Amino acid sequence: MGLLINEHSGLRKRLASVPGSPHVSHEDVLKSYMGLLGVGKSDFEAADGVRGDDWFKAALDINHVPSKESLRQRFDRHAVLFALAVQAASIEMLRAVKAPITPISTGHVHTGHVPLDIDVFPMDNSDTKKEGVSRTYKGVDGFAPIAAYLGEEGWCVGLELREGSQHSQKDFIQFLAKVVARARRLTQRALLARLDSAHCAIATLVALRGHEKVSYIVKWNPRKANHIEWRDRVFAEGRVTEPRPGKKVAVTTVHETHEFKGKTYRFMRVVRVTERSIDKKGQYLTIPDIELEGWWTSLVMPEKDVIRLYEAHGTSEQFHSEIKSDLDMERLPSGKFATNALVLTCAGFAYNILRFIGQMGLCGHNSPVRHPAKRRRIRTVIQEIMTVAARLVRSARQLTLLFGRHCPAFEAFSQVHDALSPG
Image (cartoon, rainbow, N blue to C red; front, side, top):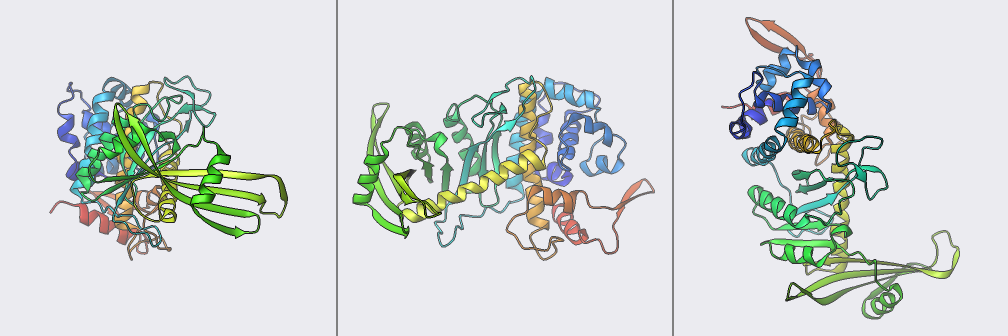
């Protein structure tokens, strides 16, 4: 983590403009917290546990580890400026190390697009009086941050804290513009933005069309649609199949014209209707069950491929889970909204660092993990690389790590360290 932050990101340079010259520098404060996140600790109190840890300071190139009180106070005082520096450093790090960004590889569907998955997810902070905690769409009190992930690896290019009751569409257009700009710094391939039905709005579709080399699939929210009328239309116009007795599925593509701010736009939507007269247990239904689904898209391809591409959007739920559980972000540590926003931004940076370490060290033949995978969960990276056992030896004012002769993680650890070391 120290090599990635110090040698491959501009965090130090960006923090130079933050006012103040305290005994414990701004850089040391942020790197100390990043180091804690690297082993899955998000609470400020954990800082006291590493103040006497020489390896922690040497690895991150820290002169002084702040106390838990200093860490909290500095985050409170410079939350906005720190967050801007950390977010920029995260993208700079991914660009400097040329992080692999894999295009879509869903089954036989290969469009050449790089997925850009954007979604809102709930964070349960019930029974607290933290600023911004309110009722989320999941029915719990907490926050509802929005995140954006790039590529099959799931690089985090945007992670912003939001109040729990804030609607997903509020301020979304501005967030979209920011994450597309960040993605453009990392890849020049065409992007495929995938959004759920919370962003089903003409304003979103128009904004997506305004970005160059950006295609989209947005889940349609049929909240006001007449299911009977749509069933009749799709079964009449579309392709009908019968997967089993009592279940019929019809799919078609619909072209529609909408007006937005005085201009006329033409959109395309894939619509699927499923009618069940017999349930999966063989029980006949008195009234047929009609399920109506749809996806706004700019891709010209078979309907089944559009649906399959959107279904892969569900992988982003795993990325949410890694941030909330593996990095211990579910219940944020501060009572102040701006401070918690900074904490979440730091989590996005730590997530990218750990993801990169996992891609380098845990996906090749030197991986101590037995089963093959195209990416490793953050928890696996922490367990197999970040917290591997070693002996720390102090000699001639130098620190040396001694690994066990049969340490399964040594090859992966050494491979990552050597690749990131300068020169």
